[in-house]
Length: 163
Image (cartoon, rainbow, N blue to C red; front, top):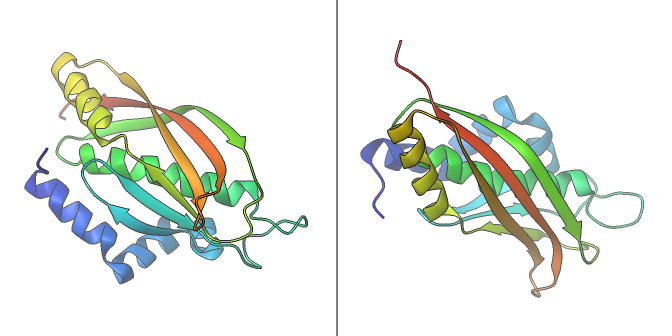
């Protein structure tokens, strides 16, 4: 899979540390405050980190579930943004499911490898003019490999009509 020039330009802006932090501060200030960071964005995969620290912890000495959910959503949403860069799309999260295995007591890394599924759904939405739904799974793990949480976000994507 090869990214279009527009998608490559978007990716370049998203992985640029200063541009990303500015965008995060403007669009997602809670994630900026919590320290959520985009670590990797490729055609098929996205990795986002959620730190453990005073800005992101709960009273039980682990990373607050909402911070984990922000990082998890970003790992799926960045792939949706990347693969819908060429055509104006309307996107919406229809459903979210999460499960938590262990306490996140250090930085958690959320990995979504659903790029191929996003490409297929976006192409079908453009071809049919109808909205398509796609369920993207992301898994959060600490550096030692311990799974802390797993989320599935169901996205609706629809190509907008030209005005």
